[in-house]
Image 1 (tube, rainbow, N blue to C red):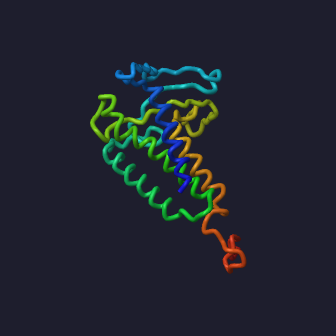
Image 2 (tube, rainbow, N blue to C red):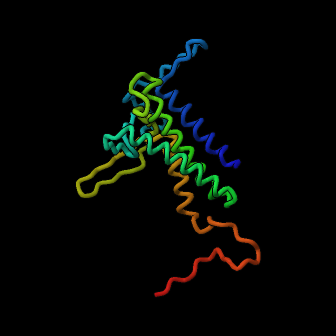
Image 3 (spheres, one colour):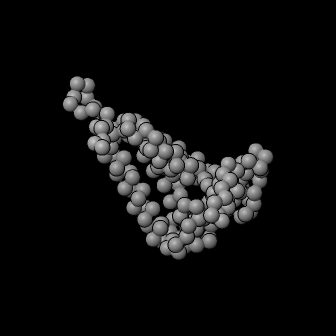
Length: 195
């Protein structure tokens, strides 16, 4: 299951980026990275791309139902479920497995924040941590029915990985599925829909 290298790369890059944004200290190695103060925003490419450090106590896009421990436990179960599904699909096409590996990496990346960051940073008990978000991009301008949005939701590497994995599944779903044997009766072409 070499696609798990992609999962590991996502988790590693996600966690390293979050640690540098939030800050960390390893006294016995004389390492002390200050990070950004919460709420700080720094321009990277003008105002188009910024580093904006926020913490998300809820789900995607800041939705908070107030069930943090339940969300953390659900995330753990979901990560194990994705891993098991990926294992059972280990003979499927590479693109399909890679999409699942990216989703798994993103799920694990944010899961680490929720489960451990509260304890590591002395902010909350186990399972009650907040997800670190910091990528702030200005490519969405929406004004509809009184709702206005001038920037996209602040996200992180794990969120981007999940999104890319889901998009791979959606855009290329027809080429995914069981690999067909040459000359077999099965076809990759969907049957026509009756009117």
